[in-house]
Image (cartoon, rainbow, N blue to C red; front, side, top):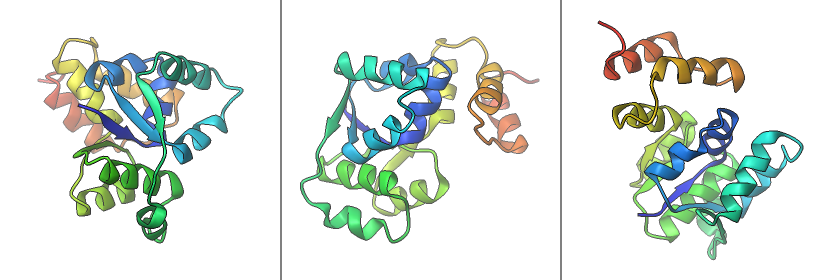
Length: 165
């Protein structure tokens, strides 16, 4: 089933060189043009080269929003990329959205969508045996991508992954 993604999960998984985990769980990922524009700001970084490979492989595709009214309305509370991703998901009749930011996730839930973030993707990958250590991947997210993970959440996810007694 297709899914719409916002900028940060794609960028952060690309940072870890683990876009394959997104593709494994969601073989058809759609992004609005505004999300691609946000990603392309980092055109000189290796993350963008990996993202471009996903686009070239056609599992990551750019979709146009035909009715921009929903996006415009959502932009009163959340940023352009998040608003565009939610608007596209609603327009395409999807139920899942890949999004990390708390405000965007709350808005997506209020609109009837079920968000999953990069941590959820990593946890699922651990349960599926696609990664050896959730702790290591979360540490890399913290240090390599500058992704904030509260220590209480870090420890809770480690327990859920069976990495602590």
